[in-house]
Length: 530
Image (cartoon, rainbow, N blue to C red; front, top):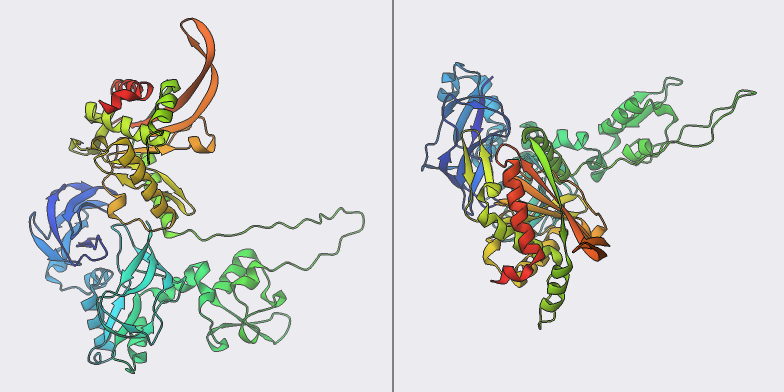
């Protein structure tokens, strides 16, 4: 069945977008993950990828045209499929499909139809799409409470997306009348987030109508394990279950009931810790079966199997999706080298002796890679089905480990920056990454990526390419070891590096030549200053 693709909201403040370039044309075959178009937002020109497979049947916005978020962008379906109904808006089926991504105005309109009309000055605020791949968000922290006065530009909440935790500001002024999602709750984009309006306005009917309208927030509260207990419920909404051994009724939350069924737990044996003895998620997680009496002559183990379940964060799910896509679509191969680090170590000591100067080996690798990439643009490239893009600019992504996974801030025009500037930028980005304060702009546009585990004592490893890059460099630790120089075995220091390449863009000889150039800069770092 044909899928309607709407103009995405690719930044937190984006209200409309301009199609800069279509990378597919009507009739082209589309695979999940293909880049459909480059869309200019209020912040940058970004690639927009397809989440659907099929044939591109219709383009709704031509190159150079501007349209509001959620305007019809394209239709993907089966080759030859009749889409006249979708274009004319005449069938009920397509109304359901298109309604999956409503604009705020459409949401407000649907609420109005079910609750007659919104009181004057009342605004429904929905879960925003804060990244290009965001499908759902989690409220990490509310910075306003019900009853608080809200000014335009105030930060309402911190919302966890699939990429980062971002501040969400209000575009309206008024009083916060209702919160639709509690801290820790997750919901799909366009679910009811909050209601703002004049103080004292009764919005209970609006909130109820919105839920009836199918925002998706209620379903998500049952599906996501970490969200069920955020909001205490009364026994009247619990699922009553009759004890098989008596007429006593057991009150249990829907999620707890589901977990018990999956684990084979008899609910009559569980003591509920919720209101009025209601069984909730934690009771199932902490349940320990009664000890079974041992048969005479049989050995009965006394140990208890145990484990902890950690719900996958939006960031972790996005990392899993992107890395799996890269690993199984880009034909990876690996080139291993070992560099003599004697000169590099001496150079760093001399360089850091300058006032207010401190650079790391990683900063030196970033600079060396940037200069080498200018000489080997094919390693600094991107693959498309019909062409290869050789980038003349060098934007290097530097992988930073965070508790939820990995973030890759980008050092832009790294070849034009000094070692000191690169060191300051990497240090600032690493701090922002660990405090979840990186903006989308600071994580987009890399042409090459470096992953360094040397500080953890790892001597060598391989990485998965950070698409749409064509290569990623894995940097190991500097190791003191015997080396052969001028026919003699002497003490030395070496570093192992591994270049993972996409064979569609970077041939073995090309990758090897890049590493030879990189070797020249790393082993003779003074040449980076020329």
